[in-house]
Length: 276
Ligand SMILES: *[C@@H]1O[C@H](CO)[C@@H](O)[C@H](O)[C@H]1NC(C)=O
Image 1 (cartoon, rainbow, N blue to C red):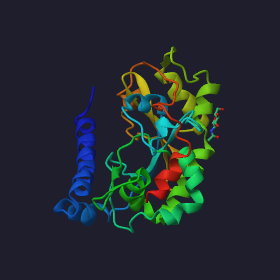
Image 2: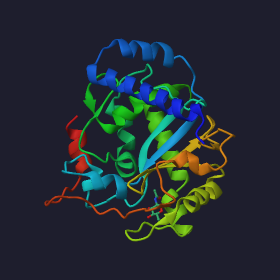
Image 3: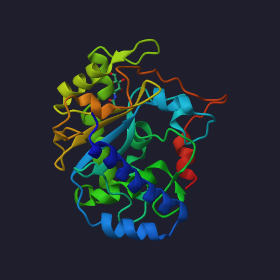
Image 4: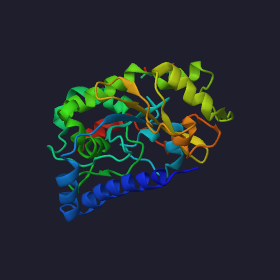
C-alpha cells in the first residue's frame, strides 16, 4: 500500500535534518554550506505547528534540572505545549538551518513569561544550535526552523510571538477534552476520533506522532497566511490515518505528573535565563 514516494520522502527529510545535526554538532562544516547554499534559498510552502504532549514526553525524564519543564511543580504543563513552528515543503521535505542572525535572548525578553509557560523545554539536554553551540531549546527552534520562514515570520521576536499566538488561537487540549478525550492514565481513545475532533475544530487534517501507543506530538498545518490546511496533501491516500502511522488505532493521552526529584524547583526559567 505504500508507494515508493512515501518511503523515500521521509528519508530525504531525515537526511536534511541530519545535515542540520551534523552541522550543529561539528560547527563549521561542508554540510552547512550545502544546506544553506541550496536549502536556504528555496522558499518554503507551508507551516507546521508542532505541539508536544508532556504526559508522554516526560515519561522519558531520567533526571531533573532547572530548565526541564517536566520537573516543574508549580505551573506544570497540563496539556500540549509548543515544540516549534516549522517551515515545510509540499513534497514532504523541509529546509533547516537557513541563514539569519543567531538567537539572542534579549530580543524576546517581553515574551519570556509566555514562552516559559507555553513553550518549555521538556528535557535537560541543551539543544544544538545552527552555530554548533549547545543552547536553549528556543535557540534551536528559531535557528533551525525560524530562519527558514523569515519571509513570513521575519525576526526572532516575531517568530516567537507568531507561534505563541497561533498556539493560543486553538486550545487543542480543550478541543480533545470537549470531544470526550481528556488526559487519562487508564483510557485509550480511537485515533480516528482524535483526528476528526481536530479536523472539525480547525477545518484541516492534523497528523499525530505516537510513542509506545501514547500521543507524543500533534502536528497542525497552516498556509503561509496562517489559514489551516491539511498536513498531508497526498490526494492518493485513502485515509488520513496513514499520515499518523506511528500511532496504533487506539491511543492514550497520559496525564502529566511533574517528575521533580525532591526539592522544589521554584522558578526554573529564572535560573535558566540568568545562566545565559
Ligand atoms: C486550554 O484548556 C485547558 C482545559 O480547558 C486549560 O486548562 C488550559 O489552561 C488552556 N490553555 C491555554 C493556553 O489557555
